[in-house]
Image (tube, rainbow, N blue to C red; front, side, top):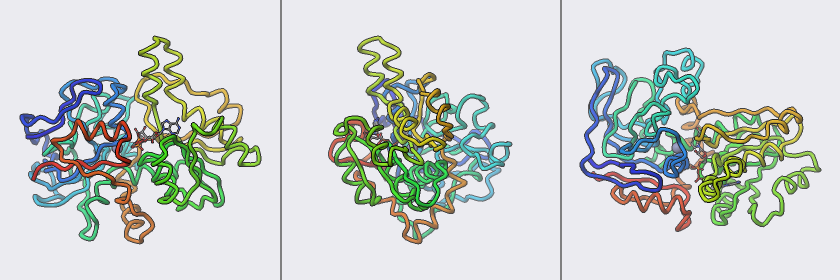
Length: 382
Ligand code: NAD
Ligand code: ZN
């Protein structure tokens, strides 16, 4: 089958001779992928920043498709069902899943310090192949996948696998109170959705910070918020303080994660500290720009094991830091309700539909922010 084949940092291709996935466990299903996205999290893999990303891996944790085959213990799905597949692989039975922490499932990935299972996200996240392929193996098929409601557009459905619940959870973890000022660092798909969802929690003011002008223009209109280019602000932290009566924001959301430019600097200079500080710029800004007693919600992903966090500053200010991978299954029904009521219009952020065969170009366009790209959907051949 045709599937993405990772060859090393910045080297990715789609090959036609990749092996078909097989049912390996009675609770597995095989899904024929109909749409799959490229995520900012895939860029961390692409940059070679996620430990234990192996050559030959197939990426892709955002996909929808049609159930092609089921294992003997799958009871809720049937062949032919069209399904949303959450990016988390979760058993539904362990102590964490029972608390709704589907992102932290112990059975899918028992490694205590790591995330739970994630499709196409290195051996750190369980070593599962992903959905940037014609077919994917879906473990615990009765737990994660949800049949797509008939009135839901497939472009909305594919964004329910990650972007919508993740943006929502970023705002939720912020504990936003009515009237709060929320600052979102990052105007990628996740930051855009976090800004939009902040209003659902009663924010009084939403400010987005990025440096890509077309994304700032987009988020201003889409999320009806303020948006500023950090390159034209002398100091983003000072700016936020100034515009909040010197207090700082009530809630800061880091929707950037590890900063690849920082690590490129490390490769060039060999200065480890410079890399680490550069690698968490948005997080430094978030902690320094939040008010005393405020909340920093970190939804951006930090793949490398070490990042310098200004923990002293967070402690001195009594900052609450909340962070997790999104628990997609927990939020899916609420997200579908928001879409059906017209509160959220996820598909508006999709700028590109690209055939899966053209995956090298698709990654380049998304990574290099070409052609006003915000979100890319890859379409496998039919
Ligand atoms: P993206 O790469 O499209 O967007 C990131 C944006 O951040 C870009 O527009 C970039 O210009 C901007 N940026 C870079 N440095 C910045 C800085 N210092 N301050 C402000 N903006 C800066 O990625 P995305 O798809 O929007 O994902 C964003 C982050 O969320 C990634 O780290 C991704 O791994 C993470 N993510 C987390 C989860 C989760 O469950 N926790 C799920 C999906 C994505
Ligand atoms: Zn994603």
